Image (tube, rainbow, N blue to C red; front, side, top):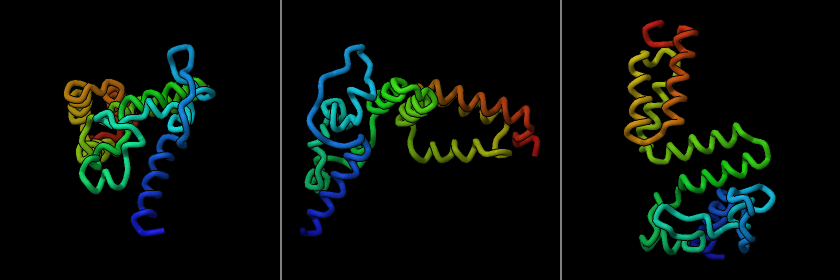
Length: 170
């Protein structure tokens, strides 16, 4: 096997793992929401639902497409819709916390990576004031439409205030 073939196989395997496998599609679930039994793993049972941000399918993502520039690296990222599907699947097996995590992740796909890291650091104890955390929450909600994440930051601010973990408490 050539080095390029090995890389292609690895890329395909990673993409399959991101979505749980890869085989032909199965029929849609009947209640309008995805379920573990009929729809998971998505790449195996519902590959038509797994798309890049520009609408390309799993089969369109190849090493050759990446090398030629037909597929951009940012297109290999998971989309908010795929994360919502994963949330529905998690709910179908009684995993509401996992579903909530998937929905927060879906919101964060709109936030640039460097800003996510800044927010992460700001959420560490004693790093931010009440006002700074409120500004982050407002930014998440108003600039990125990330209402769930904004509420998470507001809740963190309340907990930090109660536990005296805000910057002004240091």
